[in-house]
Image: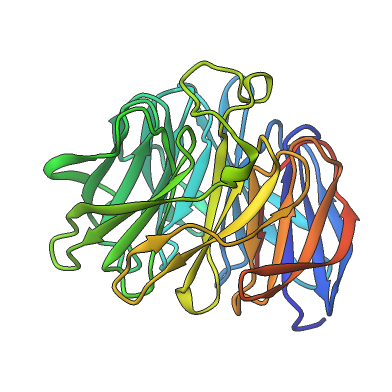
Length: 342
């Protein structure tokens, strides 16, 4: 047994989650959990060593797996069927008692309760076109669903029973045609940041910590403008048209940078975050794994692991400010698209 962190990577093409151990500046492959058809999202409860994996199929669902930190093995425990479509994003409340999900193809979001790793049938459901992500506040009182199709963030009070009650207004807008995708909350939770898929921007929303309400404050470009990418639109092929294709978003060390991935040019860049929460464009970009849908940083923000949908490997980087230095690459499988440190 070691205190070195684990890295879990979903490879949807193989229907698998691969477990690595971060050993200094190397990724040691430990185990592969198979039988997770189309898995492209999972949520981790580190206190209980449980993983909740979204799976596709007929029906789609959520699989609960237990994690052995020594071996990296994931063992199936239970399953919730979701006949209305699979999840593209799963998130847990900090206490591990409620699981939230967003379905892009199904156009719906869910809130479920969790007890001893068993996920209940949805307690609440919301419906918006092309929901792409969802996150709860750290105190578990609020939840935010991002609708790419409606260019909106939906905001709710989240009850102990998993119930979702809309705030007033229920939604706050993103710029028309921007395609909001993934969101993060800062540690103080007085700001929410959203990466857009079509315009390649990071949107800054002020958040009232008492009421949970959001208000758009500003935005910054998150893509490499030297690549001359066109603004994308719904239904267009970004690779064929050389369009912007924003994907994932995560805070770096000290929350002074927000790392963002763009898939057409396969880049990672760090948006600067000022002391007042405002954002400004990255100064440099790193070309990474082809089509980087997912990546993650360790707790200290010193290491970053990136996965590419058109690659069979993941890359491990040392992080120095807004610079990335490649340390290792490791085989992971087909269509790797989701990364989490544990």
